[in-house]
Length: 329
Ligand code: SF4
Ligand code: MG
Image (cartoon, rainbow, N blue to C red; front, side):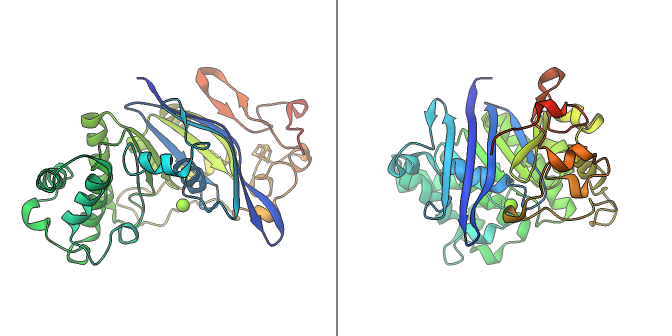
């Protein structure tokens, strides 16, 4: 497929009481039409910041963004806010973990789906309503015409997530960013929503970026995956290869933490320790305090992202020389 999004050298810094911290460090990614890319990592790894910066939703008073995010050749990062607004909710759409944060509790669900069509498209109210009902049907909401008039609180969590997806699809987006879209849902509903997203991608040919802490979710829907840790890509490649032969110790840990269906929701093997704070990064490889393979060099130098075969990349001294370590700063 054609390239839809190409992100280069994306760096995001936050201003904090303790000075500037780097939340995203030189990230690169690309996405084609009709492709699903997973971005995986624990909370604090930078995956949401990545999507918010691409969408232009970070607070500019406290953050600095540099690099490029070319959407069909147009740089989302350098265009004026007015122009960005034309893309957001239109060609670019986003869905979040908790539908209640993006659904207005005071408005009927159907009205909310109509709203973005009326803002972004030349469409009559009548046609917008017709399309909203079609969208509710498309996302698998039964009795769509009646449910059009319901308020968010009248629906179950799974149904609300479907309404939010319908809302995101209202203007036929070419790129959909889904940030933990199934995390708040139980296993059965989660599987249904993932099935729905797969189905919609096939029908509509969108590019999807799926952000999640759960490699199991990624394995269901994604073609390629980027694994992030402390704002850096630590591994990337085709999902099958990564699951079959993970290279980075962090990826190994995430795979061990995939909750097994039917088993309890808490993963049995989670990775020891926690993601370090942005203002308290360990020297050397930021994963070394948690890494079962850490060597002396890992405490001193920062591994660079190196290329392996088949477009795979990994950032780890198990696969690269200390001489190739990152030198900047
Ligand atoms: Fe572990 Fe060293 Fe690789 Fe970092 S560079 S992931 S500490 S082996
Ligand atoms: Mg997040």
